[in-house]
Length: 435
Image 1 (cartoon, rainbow, N blue to C red):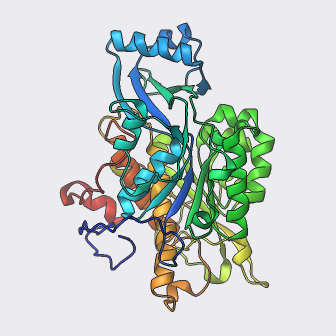
Image 2: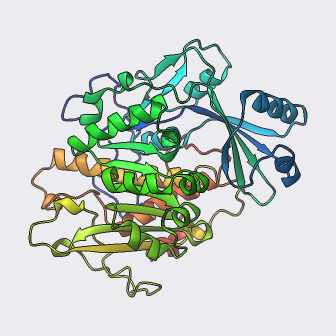
Image 3: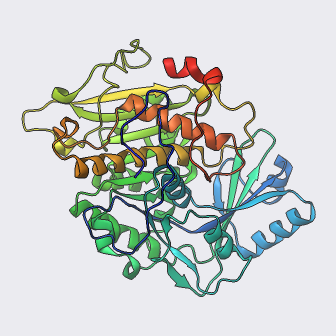
């Protein structure tokens, strides 16, 4: 694993060696630091359209909605003829996050889901496999006699993304294909709200089975919300699910508004920390916020300037590391802590689309969580493990890392990284890193 290691001051993410480790199917040993994800396997088809095109096909701008296979085929054919398709990529919010996690950490990940049984060169399933990191283990996918799911990503001139989903076999993962030993030894279980949309579907039942075993095994459960319309539709369900299962919650401002009913990012985090232990909230041009819990006896004060917004001196303890509420001592005082960062260098000069920026930020957070387990295993007597922490780094450092990965995603026309982060250019960001 690339992280944590001994860091050089010159780079926040200092690894230059690209040695690879062998992939094997043995995830039962204590030296396995993999992350498990459950996903609806999809191929993302990106295209540029105007708002009239969305209206013509009954698509709600900025939302994710299901469309019939026939309608998807017709739209795809029309866009092909008009040469408006800009790319076809392996997709799915969990698949994107696991791929980026592997690219950043050089560690393994296991993807659970359903895929077409018969794969031919050039088809959707082939494209999914060929554009997914070799570190993502696909050996535990369930083969199905159905086509791959497709996600049409319609990008309007203002950069807004609208999704039309053709299901295919994406919901066919059955509970029998959930390997308990793989989950029990993992660093985290990553799921998305999408797979819980239909509670009676096979993939939702498989997810509940995985969550039950992760909770019993003290494996952190990470939930990414996905789309605000789904949260609005099933708000009560997700609130209860978060309270009962989730340790880490990732969302954007629109999803937070539907879940919590609060626009202010800090107040939204303050509320959601009543339900979970750590939360990541992306707010577009305002950057990203992190909120977490920590035992006051282990809290560390920042050396940065204190800031007051809706919460007075909200960043006072941003040098602290996140903890689970249950890991506080009997007589401890658990407090809520926050950190915020503006977009790296103000954001890229040109943003082609925002697809995958949040997934990239979450991949960085997952890397830090896995690094904590890695370091604890390798150096158990380190003072960094004087109690049980959820992360290796402070909230302030995780903000920097997640922000940098998001910048790299936004600079491209793909939600997936295909190389690690570049070394920083002193002439461009010396002032930024000096903050």
